[in-house]
Length: 262
Image (cartoon, rainbow, N blue to C red; front, side, top):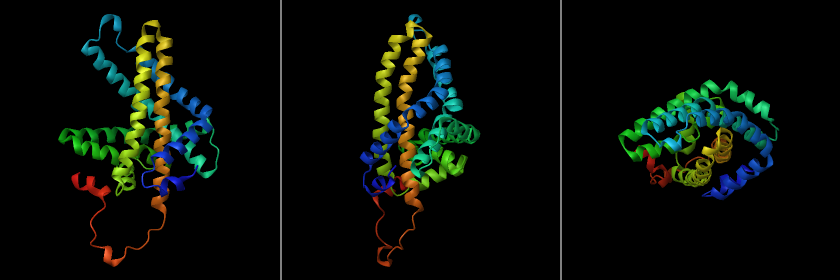
């Protein structure tokens, strides 16, 4: 994996997606095994509690389905980025990581991952309740928190702060890259969601399979997040050149604007 292309590009959408696809395609079967281990139980539970379209979509049933889905993604779905984090880092360092090693690592970081994701959700809910803009700003700042848990051994506020330190000064760039990746995932989910609605009356098995196909998009998004995190983290670790005295009073870069709004 080549982080240099990502670090050198002013807007590294192309390099991030290219390197992510290289990892995803090159380790597809290992990633697929990890995704199946994590998402099969998630999708089974979600399918069991899904509203029955033949009985209509009662608001209470929809609310219960959303709660079950959120609960399962927090408790079980958190394992996926934790496992993917170790696997992608191995591709960067030249150390091949098998699925069982990735899952063992994910289980060792599971409590920290769940606690950090829960804290992140609470923090984002608080910012969105205040205003939409602060919520969006901090969603980007905290985008790599789970990567910090998986790869750098951080947790809770330390993981959120680690993520924010990588984004700070390049907020707009990170926002643009992650927004495009997120929209691609949403588009994939929309297509597979329509298929899932068609398969739902056919039985639990087909409903679960359709859900797993949709989860491929979430898995690829996890790879994109880790690849971008590793590139930013490596860049942050490089020795910084001393700031020339005459530039001390220069205006802040536009990527720092969200920090002042937050």
